Picture (cartoon, rainbow, N blue to C red):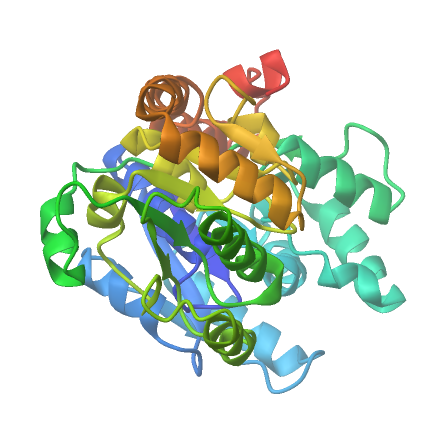
Length: 376
């Protein structure tokens, strides 16, 4: 099959990275992949696809409702001899449904956790229409699927679940530590996530400040990696106000995630809302000691006290307590990390993700994933 993978954004992020992983897995199964992204976007994703040997297509929408843009997109897909359209997130779900209907092709929709479609009645109506046309609509976690069903007033089995998958190569943590000027014995906490309020970085910074005040920090440094976003200025102000300039590093977007995770003693994800974040799956696959908020699909991946520690979202004191445990007890961190790595291998492999999607492209029914069977 020739599969069009369509996404409305193309900056570095979780959904974009998931498309790269899925494209490579589909290619390894013998399928052709045509990535489709915005003509006037950031360009990161198209560059990454080209570097991997794919030939991306672009679309251009002049307005929220753009019939000419839809027709242009349809012509491009016809010219590339697409057999299946796989749309990701709201805008492409709707335009992909229209193109699939005009071309009489199978259509699969994946939603990654964003719920901005629910803010307007016309968007909810449009997404319901797109879902009725599709072979299947997928949420990347049980939580994402159930939220979609609630927001759109759908039956309980309207949205299927295909967990994201992530493979991680072994990183070189020594290089990152040398770059940061950290000796081998220094403790490092790594957080990966774009600088937006929903990622909860402020609570993690406050947690570190509390550990320092109470003498439980063990000299740990916090490194936050992620592209700039709407909360960068407030985060920098918080770091300055708390006097943590020498203890918190803002690294910006990084392509060396494997190295960062290999360098870390603890991986922290203090998000206020999530689908099933790829950064978490990367940390699991690397065997990191994980401290995360118990929101969205995170508890489906990380079992509390088995694969990592989960705390309430937006609770700096709980983050401080969990961080203190992991910094003080490397044996605990190692045990949790081993369990997390095995869980990632069993339940969140890229092979399983791609195979599930191929089944949906062909109109079949998936077998339950290990994560679905045990409830996470």
